[in-house]
Image (cartoon, rainbow over all chains, first blue to last red):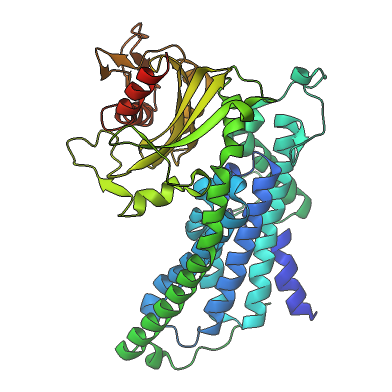
Length: 220
Length: 263
């Protein structure tokens, strides 16, 4: 992989993570992460949509009329989401019911539109593919980590298999019900964002104004 | 970092002709892709649906409803029949294993349009036939499982109501499918609320009286179930579904006939 390609693919994984750093797609990241399986399916759905959408937009970018370009991008994204939703309903019906409206809401997920409008409109098909994949993987990474934490702490299981014995099953761990609810998701994502930003020394705001240091007292 | 290719031919892409052409082309391609997918997947989805509502799924449903049944012997003691809702008689010509209730509702030959004044449950169409499940203990009838459906707040609710042998006392109720708001409307799945239905009476003076009502304090009437706070519309949707299907246009004539036959 060339230097640029590698950068386009790997950047959104940590350095420019769509959820943690660009602050996009947070609501679905909260809603589908109560357990790991829906999070995995949601990640797969989003990656499919964002990759195909980026490629499609990049393919027609030279012919795209500027004044209707957002509508056209949304049309493409919506069609892809409908297709993915139908596939999920056919082959993973139980989990698709758990995901309920959130697969459909991929249409409004800011990440997808941000990449098609912000990157695919101005870049080659190959790079757009990698960018879509990178951002999709970045989103998935967050989802998987958050869902893993929430499922273990909230239900003592992972992918449905018990990992920690709960008190109600005769074990020692009292399931943390906050983790099973939205605020728990907020906490985990918040901690993740904090972790990523402090480790990577990125997204620190530059001080806009620095008062000059006085070395001498001013005499009136 | 990223390659930016210099955009050329701006004038050209913004022309009215190009705009219309591109919009039409994109719409065409998208429609073809979406319809093709839908058409290809529909048969599989229907098969799955049928498999889901087949006999095998009734058992877990009954267990979830905490009915007093023995899973070992249940299949030997259960009878599935098709009922003609108009006459209340059994229909012995239709094959129970291949009868798809969802498809029947949409088939003009197998369904009727419900006049608005009768359509308490807001479902518009009703199939002429319905599956009923009878559970016996020895020779005696124990439970009657009836499928119900009705309009909730956002979606159609599908479920089953179970009556005891007197065809009046409600043994259990449960929804098997709905698209209500997660965390709010889906409180109709809460076992605590479903438990309220147990022991309530369906009929008063020959009319389907059981309903979901919103009162300031918990109801004491055997014909009423409290609506769920914050999910009134959805829980009342369940009430209306029960009202319709236990009423004169639903299973009432069948239940009357059933009572005449077996003591």
